[in-house]
Length: 399
Ligand SMILES: [Zn+2]
Image 1 (spheres, protein in one colour):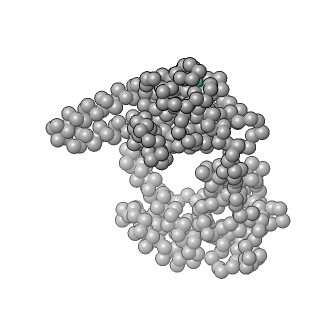
Image 2: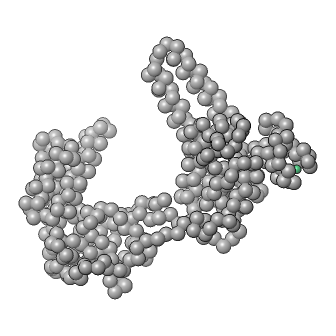
Image 3: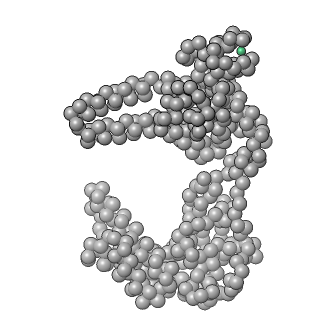
């Protein structure tokens, strides 16, 4: 899991030679983009392929290295697309023109951020084999740890007399390692109740009734359309239904994750939905659940929202969660005399069945976690160490 960010970093004032190279390259790059824009406007070209065909050769003839020529096409294409998007949105934009501040597009292979004498340096390819321009960076403290995750196309640009670089980052998600005891939050997914959440001191029910009514309503409408062979309407209604469910799932997952993040070192525990059909025999509840993509979706939503909030998620074995007594541990089908009710035949403990299941799920998570090898409990990040120069790279400034 990665988060995309962008860092805008100032270049330390470059030497006169490097300034000349930057100014010159920016000028040629701008020329190439303007050439592409002119053609796009005159001939109403919007396809990348056609723009590439006419622009690439021109850019190369302006002695723009191939990586930069490719980036000039990319820049043009995205400007043209933005223009047509505005048109479609009913606005009346004027056709894009190159601004002086356009700068230089740096393809992913045209640069690298390296550490040289404990300083961050932007190493830019000149187009001549093995020769680079080394541009020391003035990196704010907040980016120091992140520059190892630079990945993607970048851009160098000038503001007044200073040069800057926009660097795309893909920062891996690292769960916070907390010393405090984990808090297990059990989540039971179901039909009658969409979700039941149990924390050490709270219970939260998400009622599934409105959802069921809505689905019945949709099914009803569809069967009427079907009778009249209105397949377009059937399809339409299916789309509306799934939009509606997606929205409900977003709301539920958001509430669960925000509830969880109120606790110290929270761990959300869910039941595994995979491979359940074969292992859990005769459990209608799960067969229904597994067949339904809505549970899969809700699980996915909880997972990605939790990751965003640094909340861990673990999946437990679903066997026994609905029939085990949380008080004495006695497990039998007879503990469920009727749908929705739990009553232990051994110790007479009685409670709502969904609540019992969620409690058992939380307990299963607690049993699961200490047994996990450390490398799955906490994501370990392995990246190439920065500061190591690749072999064979000539350590020279070209200009
Ligand atoms: Zn019991």
